[in-house]
Amino acid sequence: MLSLSALDLARVQFAFTVSFHIIFPALTIGLASYLAVLEGSWLVTRREVYRDLYHFWLKVFAVAFGMGVVSGLVMAYQFGTNWSEFSRFAGGVTGPLLAYEVLTAFFLEAGFLGVMLFGWSRVGPGLHFGATVAVAVGTLISATWILASNSWMQTPQGHEIIDGRIVPVDWFKVIFNPSFPYRLVHMVVAAFLATALMVGASAAWHLLRGNDRPAVRKMLSMAMWMILCTAPIQMLIGDMHGLNTLKHQPAKIAAMEGHWENKPGEGVPLLLFGLPNMEAERTDYAVGIPKLGSLILTHSLDGQFPGLKEFPKEDRPNAAIVFWSFRVMVGLGVLMILLGLWSLLLRRRARIFESRFFLRCALWMGPSGLIAILAGWFTTEIGRQPWVVYGVMRTSEGVSAHDASQVGLTLAIFVVVYFVVFGAGTLYGLRLLRKGPQSSAALDEPQGGPGQMRQPMRPISAASDGSDEALDSVPGQRADNHTKGV
Image 1 (tube, rainbow, N blue to C red):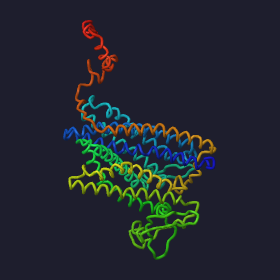
Image 2 (cartoon, rainbow, N blue to C red):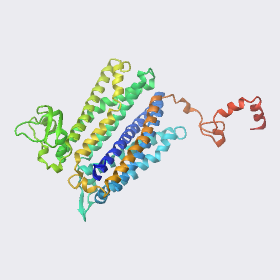
Image 3 (cartoon, helix red, strand yellow):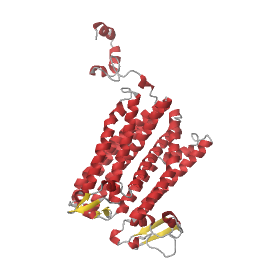
Image 4 (tube, one colour):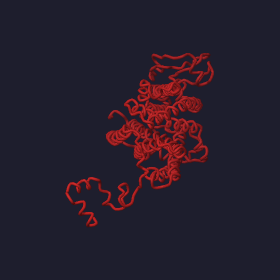
C-alpha cells in the first residue's frame, strides 16, 4: 500500500466500497419486484404458496435493503473526502441528481417499507399490496437517478464549463444522455436476472436435501421462467449497449476486444482468449474467431473500428482488466441462457424438479448473476479511465489533496469493518435462506388485545411462556393467582 499513490488508493477504496454496495441494491431491485408479483398472485388466486413465499423472501429483502442503505451512505461521503475536486467541479450536475434520488425514491421506499414489513395483519390487503408496489417502484426510481448520474459521467452533455465549474444548461440532455437508456435497462434486467438465479439456487438447495414442498417447487419454477426470458433479452440489450459504447467511448471497446490496430481490408476477429500487453501494445497468446468481432460490432464481416494504438497512451484504459472482466460477464451470460434452455427442456419432460445434476448446476449458478454485475461494473468504470467525466475531467484531477498514508489507513479500516459488518449480514441472510419457506397460516390469528402474545397491550403481557411454566412448577400457585385476580 505504501508504494501506491493517494490517487491509486482512493480509486481502490472507491472500487472496494462500490463492489460491496452494488450487490445489495441489485438484490433489493429484483426482490422488491418479485415480492410485488408474489403478493399480487396471492391476492388474485388466494393460493397459500404465494403467501408463504412472500413472507419468506420479505425477510431476505429486509436484510439486503438494510445493508444497501448502510453501504450507500459511505459512498456518498467519499465524494467529499477522497474526491473533493471532482465534487467541486461536477457537483452542479451530480449533486442534484443524487438529491433527486433521495427525494423521489428513498423517501418513497422508507415511507412504505414499514407498512410492507409489519403491516400484513394491521392494514387491509389492498393497502399492503400498494405499499409493496410503492417500494418496488421506489427501487426502480432510485436506479434511474443513480444510472443517470453515472451515465452522464460516461457520456456527458447538456452542460457548460463556467469559471472552472460544470454548470447544467439543459437538464433533459443531462439526464437523458446518450448512454443512459442502455445502462438503465441493462442494470435493471441484470438485477432481475441475479435475483432469479439466487431464488433458483435456494430452491435447488432445498430440493437436493429432500425439502420437496409446493413452495420450493414454485420458487424454482418461477426463477427458471425468469431466467429463460431475461437472459436472452439481456444479451440483446448488451449488444445495443456495445454499439452505443463504440460510438461514444471507442477506446473502451478497443480494450474490451483486446484490439490494438486495424489491418486494412481485413475484418476484426473476436478474441476468445488472450493476454493484453500494455507495454508491447499487443495481445499475447490470442485465440480468436476471424471476422466475428467486426460482425458483432459493425454488423459487417469486414467492418473496422479503432484500435488502442489510435489513442494516446495516456488516454488508454487498462486493457488487461477490461478485457477479462468483459469476458467473465459475457461467459456467465451464456451459461445463464443455457441454464434457462435446459430448464425448459426438463420442464417439457416433467423432470425439472427431479434432475439432481440440473439442480446442482442451478445451485452453483446462484451467485453468477452478482458476479456478472460486478464484472460488468468493472468493465464500465475501468474502461472509462483515465477520465472521471469522460473527455472533460481526468481522474487524477478529481482526487482530494490527501497523503497516501491517510487514504491507506482509511482503506484498511474499511476492509476490516466491511468484512465484519457485511460478512455478518450475509451469513444471517444465508441462514434465512437455509430455513426455507414456512407456512404462514398463523398470520390469520388475531394480532393483539388481551391474552394475545403477538402484540401485547401491556408490556408485562409480552413475557414468554416460560413464566407460565414456572408457575406450573409451584403447586396451587396458578389457581391462587387466578383467585386473587392476578
